[in-house]
Length: 257
Image (cartoon, rainbow, N blue to C red; front, side, top):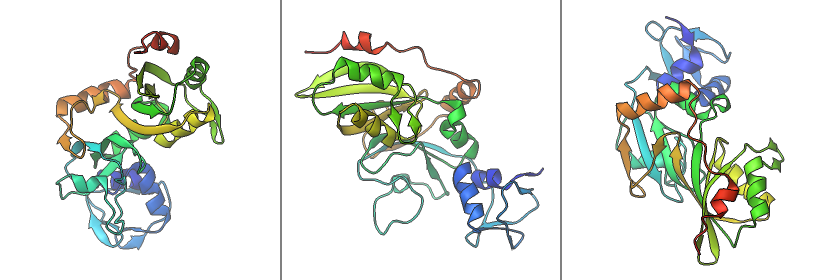
């Protein structure tokens, strides 16, 4: 059965579908010994011989891990001159990659898998899969700032996705905010808060859709149970949305003093 080359490569654990498209365009993939750079090329993984950077690849058993990323670790599959990578935290010899990336200075939940379909569901904007973050913000947060964040603010790349404030707390002179939004770039959150004059001191992702980090220690990982994946697929593929969260006005009513 023929499938698009980038999708087959994702099933082989080469990377996400978007990453595989880029890899194909870079001329790093061969089909039956010939370099293929055209997107949309179809192959039959049961018949054709595929190679990435000269190394033969084939569909693998799909695996899924949930990792609590420490600060300073990189979400990349490429060797980084002894710099720490999230994939190095997982004891598995298969070619896996990160889904739902966090930048080096951020912490929290990252998924590792070789399942390109799941990666596509989580990362593609059309699915609007919610991500939840716990942010420590310098100083106090004025109520109008929360309202602007919830509605979305204008950034160089366009207006940010709407956000929902789940709770506002205080830690000394700083504020702790739990924010849920489907915006795929965690770096956008820092820009969103900066737009309303607030500096993010710490960013920790606590959940992607229904998958939560809960009490998993920092730097540790666990396999994701098939039942959890069935839950994710069923709800995400059908456009599942989490229950409506309280608006900023309600959140401000629960500020701890």
